[in-house]
Length: 262
Image (cartoon, rainbow, N blue to C red):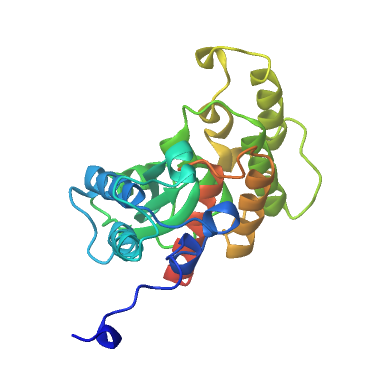
């Protein structure tokens, strides 16, 4: 093969922003081999295998291309992935199980698995009085966050996200005295003065029964999710959202509503 026929190395590395809908610092990061390995391990823990054509596969292909291009070496990891983690979280919402994949707190993949009426998740939903055929509401999405992040101590980013959710549900900017937003803000302020996590107020303490605590409720939309995500990001010093937390749960519910077209 002549020199002219040799395959040329890519001029630019494949970055997260090239293949995923992410923003900020992560979007400019080159996808590294260890990032892909961490996602493969996370998918295997949750699914029992990596998803064909899924997030881990995309990251592996990108990392391989970046190694071939000389942009990264085997064993390299991005600082965002190394410091803030690569995780896969599952959230049960009425009629489905939503699996969301995160790198550095940002969503890079999501899978929605319908849950038949006869399964435990559907039975639990019926016990709570949820209509499996109706759109998921903001209150229900907040309650779903308890399942994946209920033991997380409430911080200012959680409080901001919960407040944004309550405002979206009620349609007014007024914060209800004794409501979940007020409780979350109080919990975050309290936790800031406490050293031990076991003594802190958790999300489950604030969000359990959220539907009944809201003065009004509505089906989650993409605009609602964007508002909640923005609030959580702005109040997080690392500009990330918590995997399986408030913003992630509301986002999952909004996407499920869109897919179901209800």
